[in-house]
Length: 71
Image (cartoon, rainbow, N blue to C red):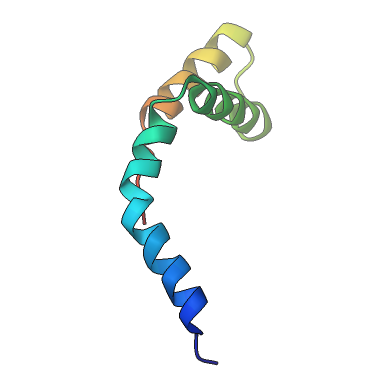
């Protein structure tokens, strides 16, 4: 299936703004909050840590090891 001109234009426009969008997301406090929520959920579901403080610390460390970039 070939891409039509409209779809190609949309893809190119998105490609041109992908770095700006990644920077926008990385600099937004909501993204940090969302990623922290996801990291906390991941730790709770996948890593057997008993103390809540340790779960939070581990989630924060996971968050610090991830970056938002374009693909």
